[in-house]
Image (cartoon, rainbow, N blue to C red; front, side, top):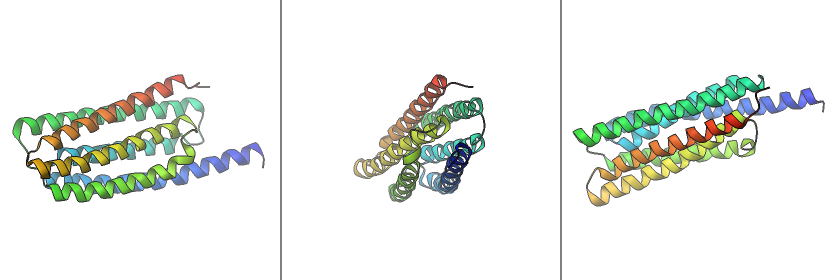
Length: 198
């Protein structure tokens, strides 16, 4: 197989994976934002915004496929900044709920979080072979891995809200998700900075 054919095959494999990831995250964002608002849950709303950020980043990664290294680095940088911007909006929502109150509905939190965990675990499996690839694919791996952690956190929050009868576990997990997203965004930016742009 010639070098050009190998590159085309790799690009096509990346494209297929990213389209599936984009569809899953777009659908899960729509489901989670509706359930998060119905459940009055900071953790679920935070996770839905994380799904939105991921969908945007998968779109950027799709754009970068087959393009020069500088565009791939730029796509990774935008991915990192999107993550950080969405994390800031998550923190604002947590502060709003802490000040004005919320009453999380635990069974809705739990149901949607289990679905989100399954969706992100499947996305992580799809990305497994690309985790050491080009910078835009490494970025996809980093934030998808963070998503699995966030989903598990919302499940724990739902259980703690049910056990304690207070909203604080939900708010704490919402803030923790923002922290995980910020860390992921910073990791992506640091990785992109090391990448040659020729």
